[in-house]
Amino acid sequence: MTKMIQCISPVDGRVYAERPALSLSEAEAAVARARAAQGPWAERPLDERIALVKAGVAKLNEMRDRVVEETAWQMGRPTRYGGEFGGVNDRTNYMSEIAAETLAPMVVENSNLFERRIEREPHGVVFIVAPWNYPYLTTINTLVPALIAGNTVILKHATQTLLVGERLAEAFHAAGVPDDVFQNVVLDHATTEALIGNRAFGFVNFTGSVGGGVAMEKAAAGTFTALGLELGGKDPGYVMDDADLDAAVDSLMDGAMYNAGQCCCGIERIYVHESLYDAFVEKAVAWVNALKLGNPFEPDSTLGPMANKRFADVVRGQVADAITDGARALIDPARFPADTGDNAYIAPQILVNVNHEMRVMREESFGPVVGIMPVKDDEEAIALMNDCDYGLTASLWTTDSERAARIGRRLETGTVFQNRCDYLDPALCWTGCKDTGRGAALSPLGFQSVTRPKSYHLKKVTK
Image (cartoon, rainbow, N blue to C red; front, side, top):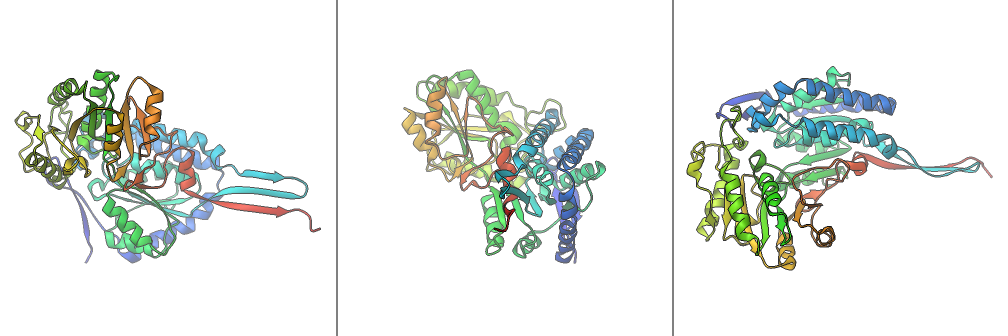
């Protein structure tokens, strides 16, 4: 019996889309087609591959209105924000610009006696398991460099954003990327794990939960398949005594609440120097109270539902537990009547009187809630920022760049921001440590993830 994969819209709770999952034999056939297509694709000139990839993204841009509407239905982001096209285009253009230099051979010697060099060779078939929170951006991070480097790609998108893979495939195929070079598939967990365990892929990129990452590592155990894992975060902000208070409030609260808090590098905990704490909290409350929670298709909605009711229930549970343990909630849920307590719409929340014994300050929330604590100095802030199982980004607010860099070197994190947060610069490596996972995306290191080194030691004489 064929298993159906369903996307339940958080907007109204109905089944928005459903597709049949491939059987294992059907999935293996797709992989076989990808493997057969990889050699001819890699043999195409690099400039041609780049042009086709950029043309695919251009075709996606032509679908803007359709994509924005479908994304809102699937995961709830308000249409007023216009989708993810700015980041999609920036990342595609940057990775295209650096491809020739990054993928060029590293020549050690080219004399009349020897030619010695290191080349970057595609892994073969790259498997992308993409998440729903930024469904296009997170796919592009691996899809673009993988195709440019000469790999073929099989994409399995999240159930919650079931149509995203179809739109990407539609756009790239319309641009001339061969069907078997980039395939979108619908798979259940068992088939996904079986393919990985059978060495179907040369590289697997997964973005999702820690539990999902553990499942990927278990599936790949003993296969020596290369894995890239981005597994979330509990990203801190630290507002120092010399910070621009208004800028810090505006950026950090946006980082905590944008996309209903469903950002891998969203701000989930904030530490404020005690001299600025009261003022920061007061301004933060005013900032959040100005949000409008509502239907994502309404033009004045600045906050939509979380992607699924069960995700909202996790956040509700963390908030309730924190309050039971002594935290104080500063936002009145009555200001946000779309939150009925039994749907995917959840009122944003600021918690004070919090500590690191509370789940809301240690476990990933991935929702519109943030805890704020006062600190007396940098040492206390560093200790609290590092007191976490995750390590994706940290946001430092100060006018002193040397101080920010000095603190940043002591933080267990993948990216250190000064006076900004919740942003991916395609020229910098996107990476993490601890339970955030391993691997690298974007920047020249992103090409290294989707290729492997191959050495050539060519002796031109026999004596």
